[in-house]
Image (tube, rainbow, N blue to C red):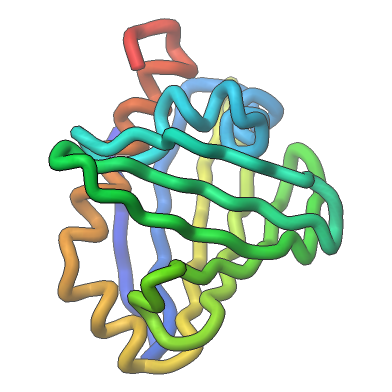
Length: 157
């Protein structure tokens, strides 16, 4: 299963990927720290701190560590929590990689015995999106999704 990436308009990036697991399992992998720490991040990066208050108005904080020991912190607030269908939250990196809050929507749609996950990342500015596209973002997300797929199908993650 491959990751489809598109960039409609001037502030959005849309990511779509199918998983061979029911929406409830995919949703849980996005919202339970014990599962998130097993797959979230690009190859060589690990989620070393994961705090989630999964409710509307609740906050999350992720700290990822790279192969050289460098750390990256992202945090945000949940605006919609509709298990196992939808999550909507803000995102901000502590290093201000992108100006302003990014708004991220995840839709978990049942398809057969699996799930199609569509994520829409809306940056605060067109410049923020362009900056994100200049990074190896799609590769990193794709690698994380490979780890998620392995977790969901019982492989190693």
